[in-house]
Length: 484
Image 1: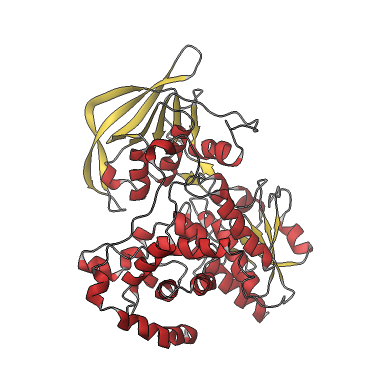
Image 2: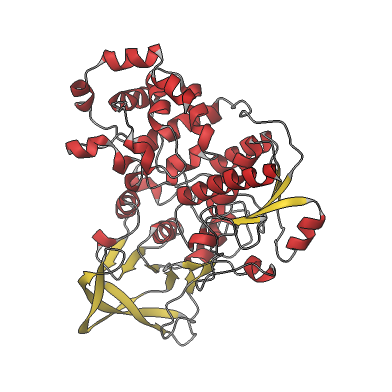
């Protein structure tokens, strides 16, 4: 806190405030993210958003009013000192901006791409009260982090090893965030990943047109540089048990195994050929290269593809289907577009890429051809009733309003459940009725040496919330282990 105060009162910071009046800053229009042309995007998995130029980033950083009480920080689950890194961008100290990001975030280049800033930090920006577009915090985070990667970052500051070994189950955002925070504090960290590549959902769940693998790999390399060790093809609870870890000298375990068990709708015909979960679809293509040159994994092909759901994973699936050759790709969602949980940017990109939206419609049955392959889906037309517990209006069936849509591939994206393997393999580990690991406010489980966070606790959430859990758990576990 003292360091932040020094930064906020530095002479250069004062000069930046004097350079332009608040009125002059608010008159600067929010920068527009450069993007690949929509006409070419559906033929490529290259990243859609291209990132800001140094000039664009500097101008956008100038918009920040450097509020005495920065409410944007309140909206950040990992507590990034947002005005501090932005003002460093404004004065051209990009390395200084990146260093501030890494004080609290292990994955800034990832977060700058996939975190829903519009619902978090940017939603708290003072510009919203002025009815103006908030500062593009996410774009600026990406700019600083990417610049650091391009310059081959220095090893992040970290303490010498204290000799205490801690294991991490899962290499998704919660596990990586935890590993980075613990390594910075001097703990010896081993991360165990069940799949053949490190990155968890960042690799298998998010397509490269949103998050390139090279960016994830660069963040992983930064963790390796401060001593984090990674192990692939290792299933905690099967390949290695908790008892094995204890016997090997690990003093703590952080469970970040995610929520990779797909849900289905349990409607007639759901077992026909050509109906699969978004988890399987995206994993086959993102992680296993299905349908691409040089890979043997078969790709689920469809000319007319329906994706059921309205979240970010549904958008990832339908946009992937377009890139895999679908002539017609559609979202079927039981509420209206306004209620969709997906980011507005993802919805816009999907529309630009030719995706159709069938809203206020809910699948009730699949029909198949003589070979048992799905040929159509029957949908129940809906209307919106009263708001439910989430604040969204509840969809209500319109009596007799049933339509049939011809399809040859259906991708179900209606949610996930926690991975049950680890909870069921550790004796005495308490779980909730939803199958998530039960934790207290410190993210400590019923077994004092086991902490947990991310989707295995939340049951499905965003990358940044999982990262926040990882950092929180690291702080709490470090305090516990150092006190023993």
